[in-house]
Image: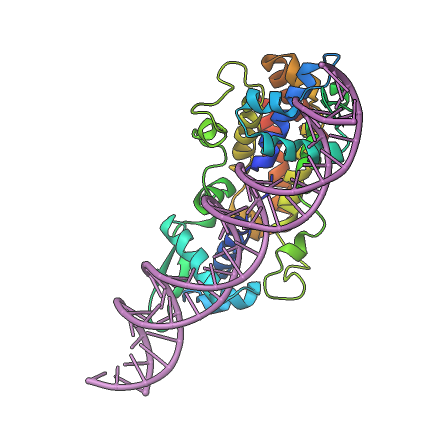
Length: 156
Length: 156
DNA sequence: TTTTAACCAGACAGAATAGTCAAGATTTGG
DNA sequence: CCAAATCTTGACTATTCTGTCTGGTTAAAA
């Protein structure tokens, strides 16, 4: 159970774009330098973010990327959804059906509801933290996350 | 952010062994059939569980696997630790350092504390649910998990 | 209009993960 | 003692994930 490279680096690049907020778009080369990643790789990640509707770009000289939505409107959950497949998708019992056609645990699965709760909870908690929180300050982000976790826990 | 095949299938196999609890050990072939997995694969997973000290085995005819600890003593966290690498290990800033020698985000990382809290929280929550809970009943397991989440949230 | 800096797209190679295969070791039962 | 059933081990293959490379397209600037 760990986060993928795409999620980690993709989020970082998005934060760079959000932090920029200048008049001119932020070029890939700049982000790559800031993050210590290759230009090609950053390009790939930003493409994914663009197709997910989080950023937009302009081509040509003096081109680059800029936010397509306000950082305060983009939750961590949304970013992760864009950068990776849904955490616990409906195809779960297909993915883990082994050699059988259908999942062996149709009745009392025992495990599925556990992952289901965990993922639901996590997604809801991460939905309460935005990119704006992250770029504001580290302390604020932590506070916001903890508050969000507690709120979701109370809702269980 | 998703669970790996080893975690999923390994946990399932462990549950099979825990459910058995008969006098004679449970052979791999039995587990493989129950779970719809290949005998070879199940063997590999059980080997990992054995080396992690969760199960033990006897060879020869009428051999198989049995629990090395009481199901009530084994938390989900422990199982996941055995089946995969630690969720968020200390080598994090090495893993994601890009092309640079050291992580670019030594001062204000912004992301690291988020994952750190999430993982810590999750690990603690999963530490409050045992294999015994899982094999008891689905409803009990869900209740136990929710209670554990709430307890950990209160501690934040 | 030419140059140039940037985005875009798909193929590609390397690494990590998943899962299989085959030969060997150990114990039980006849 | 022998044979069958079972675990053990390591090598092997296949698939997915990472990250790179190459050749394009676009548009601003000189």
